[in-house]
Image (cartoon, rainbow, N blue to C red; front, side, top):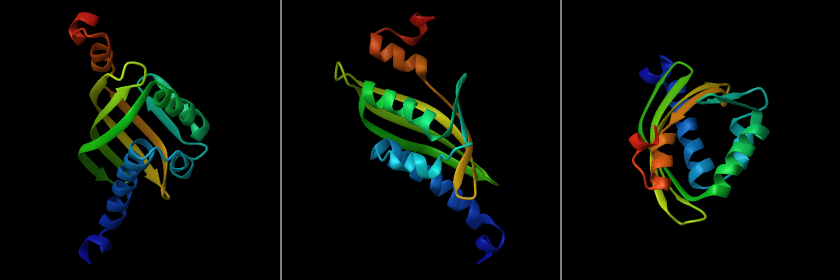
Length: 142
């Protein structure tokens, strides 16, 4: 097969692994996938924050799961080249205390090596989230 002989099969596998992360970790709430795909020595840069290894990521994840529920992450577009996979996504969820539904978008770039994530960078619409929760427009927050 031309694609597999040119290494594109590996790129596709990396892309599918990242899409699996969003589905299993966020949509299905499978915390064990964090330990499988985000091992010790891996790093996530979430805006200005740096999370290292599965334990730090789990604290971040557990905090979001405590504040919000009914997560539904959907990939809008995903691209892969070499060991990098980029996903622009949308997420819908509900604030736990108020039940208020919210929707944001974000972009994640993930380096996949040997079937696990070694580095990842993400940015998401934190201002849009704050605006939806406060009832103000994002522009009025600044």
